[in-house]
Amino acid sequence: MKTSVLENNSGLREAVWKVAETAGYLWEKGWAERNGGNITVNVTELIDDGLRALGAISEPRPIGTILPHLRGCWFFCKGTQKRMRDLARDPMSNGSLIRITDDCEHYEIVADKPVMPTSELPSHLSVHDYLLAKGSPYRASLHTHPIELVALSHCRKYLEKDAATRMLWSMIPETKAFCPRGLGIVPYMLPGSVELANATIRAIDDDYDVVMWEKHGVFAVDTDIMSAFDQVDVLNKSAQIYIAGKNMGFEPEGMSDAQMQEISDVFGLPK
Ligand code: 13P
Ligand code: ZN
Image (cartoon, rainbow, N blue to C red; front, side, top):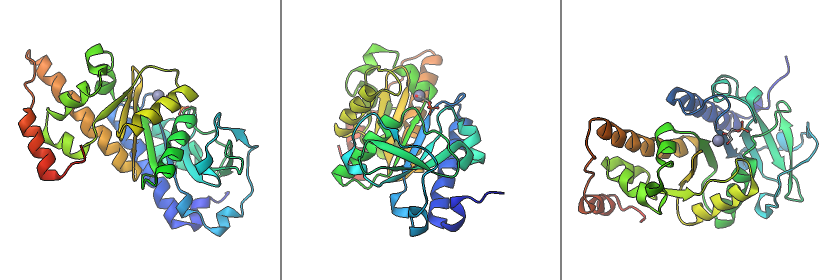
C-alpha cells in the first residue's frame, strides 16, 4: 500500500485530522449536503524538508488571480465534488496537499493523490493571502451551508449591514462573546468566482471573521479550523433560537442594547 505524507510528520497529521473531525461535525449538523462546503488550512509552518523535496503530482494549474503573499505556501484543501462525510473518515483521499508556485498564480498538487482542490479555491486562497499580508495569526478558512443562517439571508431586512448581527447577538449572551465581530454580508455572486473572492476579502477587511454569502452559505476564518467552525456554530444556534420563538407564535424579544454592551465590557470584546 502506498504510504501517506502524514506518516512522517505528526504536526501535519494532527492538522489534517482536525479538518477531518470538523468535516464530520458539518455533516452531522446537516450543513454539508452532497459535496457542500469546503475547508482550506495554511499548513506552511508544518512543512519539513522531506515534504519540500517532493515533486508535484499535477501540472501547475491557475488559481485565477495573483496572490503575492502566498509564494511557496502550502495548503490542505477539501477536493472539489468531495463529500465532507467522506473527508471525515479518509482525508487524504478526499482532500489534497497543494503548494503555490513561485509566480503566485498557480498551484500544484503534491500529495497524497491528485485530488483537485475545491471550486471555491479563489475565495479561500485570496483570503489566506489577505490574512498573511495583514500579519494575522489566522490559518484556517471554512465555507459551509448552515440551514438557518442561509434561510435568514433570504430576508431583505437581514441583508442590511449588521441587522442580522444585532438580532443574532441578542438571542443568547454567548453569541456576542464567541463571535464578537458579528456576521458580514456579501451580496449574491456566482459560486467559485474571483468576484466572490474579492467581495469576501472586502467583507473580512470590514472586520468580520464570518461573512454570509447571500442565499448560499457562510465563509469563516480563524486561527484553526475548529475555532472557525465554533464561530459559525454559535451564530447558527442563535438563528435557531430566533426561529424557535417565531414557531411558538411570537417575535423573540432579544437582549437589550444595555445587556449586550455589558457583555462587551465584561468580556473586553473588540467592537
Ligand atoms: P466544492 O465541492 O468544489 O468544494 O464546492 C462545494 C461548494 O459548497 C461550492 O460553494
Ligand atoms: Zn457552497
